[in-house]
Length: 269
Image (cartoon, rainbow, N blue to C red):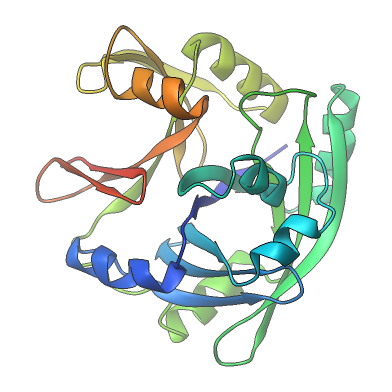
């Protein structure tokens, strides 16, 4: 299974309201569009083809009453009581049916692929397929799988032409996502086995006061952090449970962190 990091989802009350605060931090973001009939809409921030989706609801009653597939993104949002913050992420594939077969062979519960689409503000349509997989009672959901109907080169060209992929004020790169987990090594090994990914270095993050195990993924690595004592990771686990809580960037002018709607944004030089 060959995967690439696709996007991280942050649930927010009003997606359009993140554009200006992100701009003030040097991050280019645009309003995305509406998921018709599903009660959600979004804003987007791209770093080449790795991006952050700011997902909100225009009809929460519709979202809540719709039947959602097990292990789906919306199921996670609903179970999280629509609280703001990072919730899930997606990996991209070119063989979603083959991925479904291999995940089933590993004993996972698999749903999909499901065809979906979104209408952009200019009225054009973008379409894709999603696949959901996981174990019963997982405290940290596996990523969901996406396959876009257009290929990467077509998507990149189109997003540049539409101004979705814009010039960040700094030449920063998307480095990956950090997850708060109870056991960094155990979780990383399980995910690397399911997804066919390689374990990278393990280290101690003094700022987070956590042991971190890295899993390599094209487009954005996965950082699993378990607490060594009191600190950011311990607080996330206590208040929200196992979950993504920080997005990481490299190539910044200076090392710094800011918070936006229960999400941490960490920049390294």
